[in-house]
Image 1 (cartoon, one colour):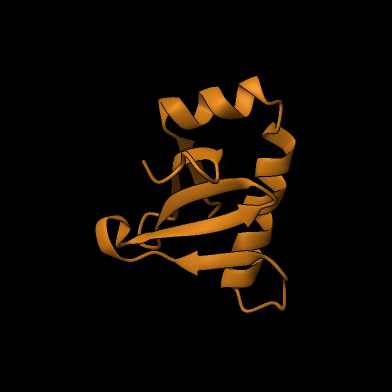
Image 2 (cartoon, helix red, strand yellow; image 1 turned 90 degrees about the vertical axis):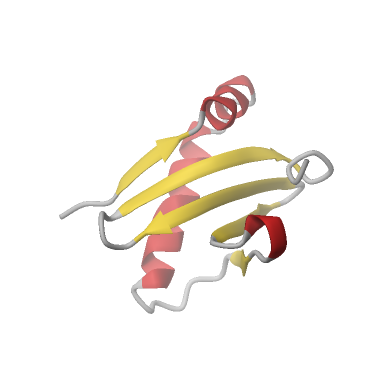
Length: 88
């Protein structure tokens, strides 16, 4: 069974405006390989506080915040934005 990746309206808008759709697919692919236990180098962090249950991937000055549901094999990308604006 494959993983489903869904995006919030804001995340989709940022990805389309900055033309980084292929980059996002590659990053999510790397994340899934890392979850399988492969030695993949991505800047991944489990978030705390208001963002508990979410993960963050850093791609230069862009941050990708998402949640993972292993039971339904779904990744929900909540927000993609620049470093200074993503946590607001």
